[in-house]
Length: 273
Image (cartoon, rainbow, N blue to C red; front, side):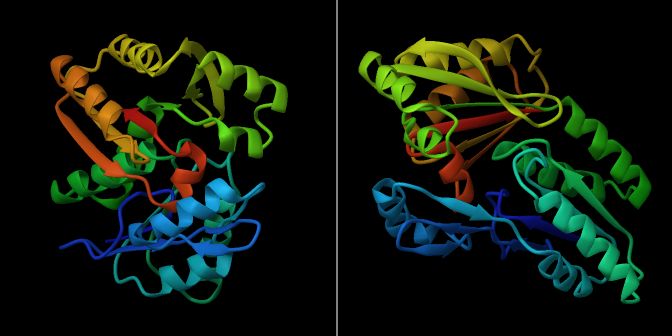
């Protein structure tokens, strides 16, 4: 099989034994532009991100997906960021249509992760597990779709600057939150929209609320992906607390460029499934 993902997946090739291709988002700041290839871009990228007054993101084009599909020898599984956050899912669907119009014959399914950060990661790991079990294409699609529907994604960031730059937080609310050290706890809905779950005074309370919510979701035996934008302190806190709660596997990853924009510096995004 081949896995084709946009760069909401915080995993990058080469991965031994896996035919993985990650198509980068393009992120534009005031005076610079980046293609989301690898973590070694992060030091310069983060400096530009903090200095920039605005930013824009552009998803992969249908032709980029088409080119990735054309190189496959076997079934193809696509993974995208939530279709409510970006046009990447629609681009992948158009790329699939172009593939068949151009004579392609391999089976393709595109998974709308309805998430960001950990969601694409857990779909990726679940695809590997089910493929190793020898299931056929249709069985894998059915099981991964059901698994995706069971996932819950939450995040907390110690910086709210990018929420303000993206227009999701007014300047007045931004100033009040910074002055009072108020941090929002965010959660993804079943459809993949990011909404405000709760407020907390300071990091300790915010991450405690995140963990408490995760523990309400019967985590024993489930998988957890922890993706962080440099915040190893609180990422490790969540890991230790969820190990106590009985999760069966934990994957921890540093966010690459796209998810660092969404999460901002010193954030943690978790997906339980």
